[in-house]
Every structure is written in C-alpha cells, then in structure tokens.
Image (cartoon, rainbow, N blue to C red; front, side):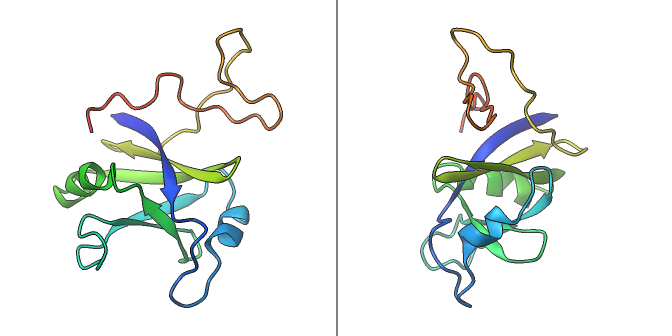
Length: 134
C-alpha cells in the first residue's frame, strides 16, 4: 500500500465544454472520490492523466512530472483509488492510494515549531513530501 498527495494541474483552465474546473473543485468535498483517467491521445502530452470529479467534470491533470509514473502504474493494472483532498491557497490536491483500499486524508498534525501546518485553514501537507522515486 502506498499513498501520496498530488497537486491538480490546470485547475484554472476551462474545459472544452466551457466547464469551470475551479468552481467544480470548490463544490467537491474533501474525501469525495475522484477518477484518474489516462489520456494517451492527449495532443499536448501522451502521458497525461486527467482527474475527474464525482459529477464527471474534469478538474485538471496530474502534473507532467508525475503523470508518467502514475499513468504507468494505472496501465499495469495496479489497484488505484483517489479522493479529493482539498483546496489550499491557489491550488487543489488529491490523495491517491495504490494497492487496494481507499486513501485517507492526512491526519491533523500536532502544532510544533517544525510543522508545515497552515493554522488558518487546517491544511496538512505530507510532512516529507513524495519519496517514491518519480
């Protein structure tokens, strides 16, 4: 089992049908399931992995740096589940879990002098960042 947090890239771009990605993200609750959908025919990046909201609207993409890694694991048939983690500052984030089961939202960390916790909105990023070799 492996879990990680990923930023949603392209959240401020409109969808082809005119849908507003940021508005959709604002209506998505932390813990809501999202779908990761590889787009091998994407004209900008054949490794693109779209992030789809529970209502079926595209929220954006896995970043270009992480997409080859995430897409290859999906294409190998690994079990993957993703949930919306939340909006923080100008970005939005998802939580992904490989190996079965549902991802969990990061726990609320106890405040400390080394904490990266944002006191204003309670957003808790992963303490050490991704350490999965992408």
